[in-house]
Length: 294
Length: 313
Figure 1 (cartoon, chains in turn brown, purple):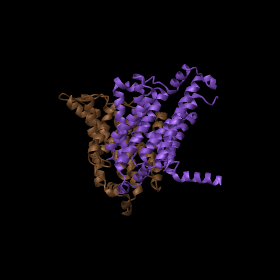
Figure 2: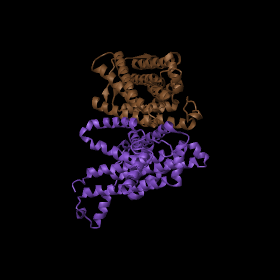
Figure 3: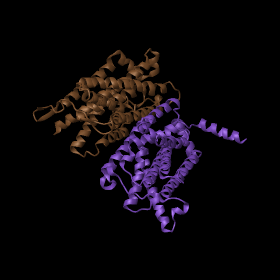
Figure 4: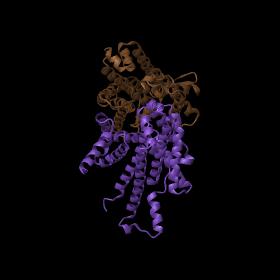
């Protein structure tokens, strides 16, 4: 029924939004697309799974473990795959994109080696708990996912707009050199951005595990591609664009599956961006790039 | 003739197909457009050739030609709206084109066979052997076994196609068109101000790249005799880009070298099986740190040329 599909779509969309936020933060500050983000997200999911099933720990511990491990991966990614390129003259944006593609190939195969291929069951203790409001059935998992993603989005928006560190980050995103001249430790801000973005990927990983009940080492790719589509769709580097784009994509996918054909589900994201790019190349919430920046 | 085994020849054939794919992205890149849609164009060429020969008994060369041309036309159709985009936007939009095309291939089961793909595509080598055998030829007369002859024929056809492709674009780079490409790549506004019709040349380059990808796809279909949507995923698109970036995208030999090296390396590293793609990833990162312009760049080529000339004197 319509309302249930609406709730499904919003749940799905809020996970997409969190993945997309990881991309948009890094793009906003560094002007590069972090192609390894999808794989970091996948690792977060596996860490959460191992903590829940192998160690039998409660879900909050799984979130914590996923956050810590993906944050560490973000730190390593920035230190070894991005920073060396930044100090180098003549390294184009293409170079850092390829470098993150290298990391994504590395991580995907590492996951294959460590966790094996195929689906892993991600069981949560309250997967079956649901309650009825009138004719509506709502699963507790959906509520938890929604609450966590909302908290994360609001928290990030507040942190970016109000806190000192958030302002420094926005200044760095605005103009790296000027921010540096004004006393912002830009290297530290860049590291912080990549770490925060990766940790959000980790949270999204555990959320996906909860929502779909199974995970595999290929899921970083499909989620990563959707995340990319969303940031293009919502406007590169725009935090609100990523949130809105995620919700729109989640809703359109859910309704496509419910009322149309499920075969084209994974293509919707790209049909959306192709349409948006042709009508408004800078994305729904994007700002047209200044001529000087070309 | 032990070394001439079908395995070596097959790896060599994939090197050549990948080299054409590498050139296809190089051509588009040489006007500063980053396209990740080449896997999609490749699938167009491959499926066109495959379906024409399996369902309509069209001769292989005609099928290959039709596949390449269709991909080239699709390149024009995609290339014109793509003019509005640049950089990362163009990359993701063209990647999206490929993914949408793949979804169509999977879902249009009545035509494409869905996720299973098209099997029993006539293989170039087998067809030629059958044709020659009818006229009293036997591969034993050359000291070859039948499967050696088949692989060798495929290899030679691909070698000819690759040499033809590389020669054509090498000559093109020294022509009016090639100089226009270079001017657009260096500075689009300046090129436009100098009177170069950039719209025409950018769409031309895009379409040439698409045509080459379709050509490579059609050759691929008739070399492996089996195609499925799984052959044209995101991984393929990225692989093609990596050929050009790893090998060097400033000279046509760059992507050719990149394709050869990156196709042979995982095969040569079979003994460390599970770790080779991990190593591949590490190699890409290291490469971007130490030589972001790719292995082969104009200064390196000049160095070799000087050395050769110096030795001759």
